[in-house]
Amino acid sequence: MKLARHTGFTLLELLVVVAIIGLLAAYVGPRYFSQIGKSEQTVARAQVEAFAKALDAYRVDVGSYPSSEQGLAALVTRPAELAKWNGPYMPKNLPADPWGRPYLYRALSPTEYDLLSYGKDGAPGGEGDDADIANR
Image 1 (tube, rainbow, N blue to C red):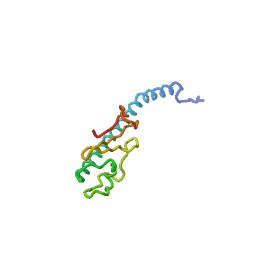
Image 2: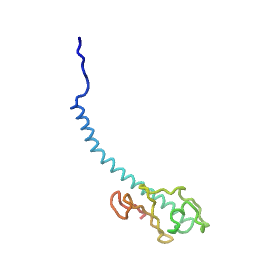
Image 3: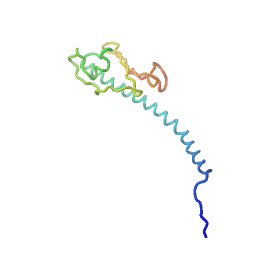
Image 4: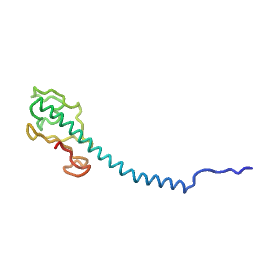
């Protein structure tokens, strides 16, 4: 009679494999998650540039940037008092920043404006992922 052979992995072999997977995760994980923050910053900068182009097109048509009261909504819907408006200059739904907050727009003069996102922390200033993203 033949003896039945039991084949399989020993506990020690399984522990070695789990340890190797853990080391790889500890090495790759932080690098992967640091890239996510950089991509959010990149998206915010691209959106600010898109807003700037739309605001410049608005200024060419109307003669000035929207007032602070009109805000970025003037890029989508015609303000009542403007006859030269030739929009919409942006899609119907104005995008929020990558962190889900609206961009802040303030007209400084008919030819200057501030447009910014406060970054991940939602507060002025900051560094890294928390840094402000602005048109200047």
